[in-house]
Length: 338
View 1 (cartoon, rainbow, N blue to C red):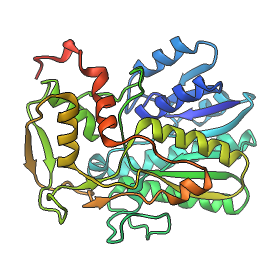
View 2 (view 1 turned 90 degrees about the vertical axis):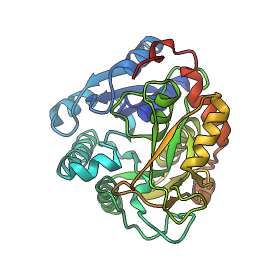
View 3 (view 1 turned 90 degrees about the horizontal axis):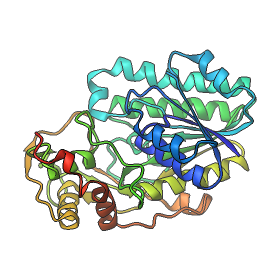
């Protein structure tokens, strides 16, 4: 089976491509490297030279290039990861987030229309829920995103649902929570470059001595220890959910939204404690004020995913932290850098 994977160079897109290729899919991947570099693409090309085909494409501006890339490739499903993705950054450059995330999606949809391709798995986000007093979050929870990033994801969901209701496409929209970890073989890992906004790369940079302290944004939330609580999910669990969603949407019609989370909330301080125990590294911290767009608590009720696509998370927090650290534990090139 042939798949189109947008955002194929990123942490999640490359992780999905890797697992899909191992399972015998042929993957056509594209990315513009705005959130990534060529590292993961080279790994995938070397490991799967006949079944991974990549082209550098800016989905938001290069419609004809997208159309030519997938023309007559017999693609059966699109997995749309490509997106600007930082909550914090989206509050600083909202216009760019609206332009990029929506234009990219419109161009993917136009290319799908030309190829009469109807199956789409969309990379949504738990950020569509915003601040809710009702926890854990079900797919029926009121949608009130706080950040521009979350608002773009929700807007795209509305567009996809409208098209699905008109029988133009079939969509599984995956609202996933906070992926961390890496594959057991350590081949595809999350970048720890200094422009990363995700929590685990920032923790690892401090553990390696690249940065001096890890900044905890907000210690005055109404939570057990004052720090924000999130639902952390192992990247392998997240990817298995995407593969299950591909199987489901190829046999289904309409639009479905699904949470991918463990159903367990973990504070930032508890994540740090678990990581330090797993890595045997100290991670000095400093507290700062809350970030715009952040919410106090956000964790999933995954019951619908369990029922509809027979998916369930397998990994606990300890294993997530161990697998996050393993690829870097002997990484001498970082030691002593600041």
